[in-house]
Image (cartoon, rainbow, N blue to C red; front, side, top):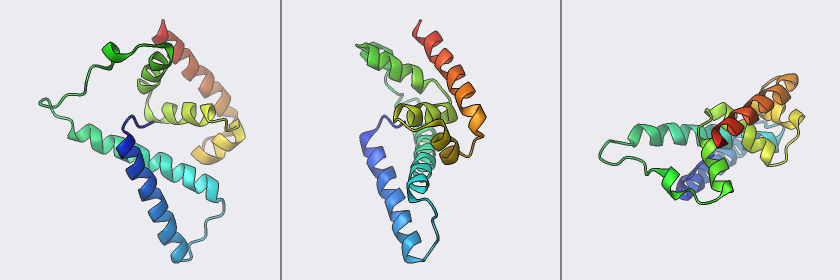
Length: 129
């Protein structure tokens, strides 16, 4: 989801700091795994939004098409063109989570996960052609 390793470290640190303070304040977290995944996704989205606002014309993002050298890079580029919700579903699915787990983590209806992922895969295929 994040192409910036330093940003990813910041997000993970922020999530675990939030988790630590929640535990010290005796906040009830029913499913730690889902809470951590959902928090990481949300903080990652927030980070991407923040970084998008800081890009200026004097410091444009590099043209990644020139740097793409193999099929994996092409796929990552196609995923980058998806909206944040679509990226989240693809990443969770690629990490091996089941449709049921993805539905729980994202708050979406279970029946919609498969259909939505199918549509997303079609978008990725079109981008790769």
